[in-house]
Image (cartoon, rainbow, N blue to C red; front, side, top):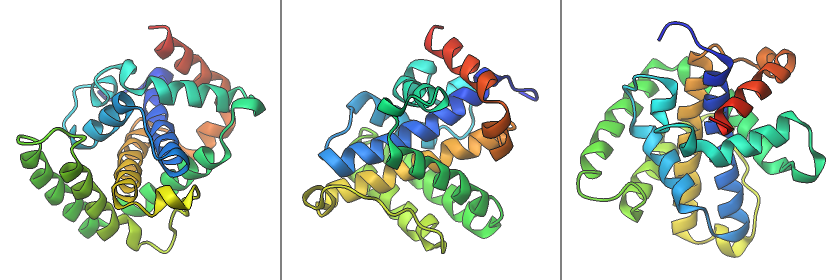
Length: 207
């Protein structure tokens, strides 16, 4: 695809917000919706999609993210998750740093190919796969000076399985942020095209 619609941009940005919201949920409750988690993690390995929707296996794959994004764009104070927004905006910033680092991009691509092989033996939400995603994030994105400070319940954050899940979700957020920029998304889009993005969100939700 060479031209992208606001619906495409909404799907990509919903992927970022879904990943960010999953991080918040795991950090604060130790739990994450299995279907949303599976869709976000699967999107990391979908490196040759035929469309934006294909990355998430349809809009249903980022329905949680679409609803969070809608509440953010509508500025509904009661439903706005401050940490989710902070994570999402930082992910967009980190993806720009990654895009300017060819060596790191190559390392990410090579490591993802190995994880794809593992997925032939384990489900994408298996702890072995999540640990592999987490290790990849820690060895690459985490080395940037700008880092995401995750806040939550210490009893959840101190569990290795949750720490891995958080890093894996952050990697999913980076993948969605890459898609957002590939569809023409930018910080200016967020500021100047909010109503058009919201229209894209609504069409995805009601598709």
